[in-house]
Length: 390
Image (cartoon, rainbow, N blue to C red):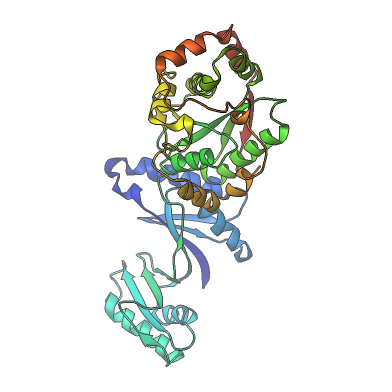
């Protein structure tokens, strides 16, 4: 008897004639996630198995696989030949101790066996009671449920419990998006949420050295690195933003500085996104969370984008929900580090809450040689390539 990992996926089985595309991408992502580890990958009808791995590395396999979007759960199972005695031995290993309730559930794809699923389940339950007479059978709400999955090719899988995985859709099945990544809590969660829907993530960050430190930049690199555990490889574009930000401060009304800054950020993000084949921009905006995230502010910043849609996956989430997700995906502690990014530089005391497009465009037009500054910033972008194995 040997241990294997039984993998399950969700939505891709609803894709009809396009199912093969999603399934092949999922398998590709599973293999990328397990890069550097030795194992055998088995694909059968509606089933995936990871076998022949070193059991002392099992926790590493589980940790990587639970972060693969498209997988809904996995189980650590015992693989045996489909013989009743061997099934009974495997089931007995999972029998709970003491006065507990249990159930044995059997699925039988191999119709060559001389007993049906209910008969086999009753037989396996008998093995459990023989080992621990204090057990009680509960078919409705058992404390422990043991599963016996009898497959077509003469092998069965016995397991108890399912470990939740990331769910969603395989990364790379929904195009590519450019994430505006700051050092805060929101934008990493936004990128994670869009990757969970199958979008490949690129990221862009605006760095205003020396007003913001190299530690602030490294904080963003670290956040992007953490996202690679879920999103796969990420290209991070670091835009030198000091000159533009100084000009905004010099030429624009104080209350409109944030509005103009965000318009220029989206303009640069769109130009970079189009150049690298991204089909959307992604931001971490949540409605009414701050002054730049009112309906009016969002309308004015949208006006700066010409071609691409802007996805705001956090738009209806409150801060507690965002924080909880940040903790779950391990970006919270990094986002909490006290290194300011460019969004906090030259922050006006009273930013406009309900800006108008006309005023914003007028204030932006006051900036001398803005187009030259934008072109120079794009030409001097630093591209950082990150992967889960970095």
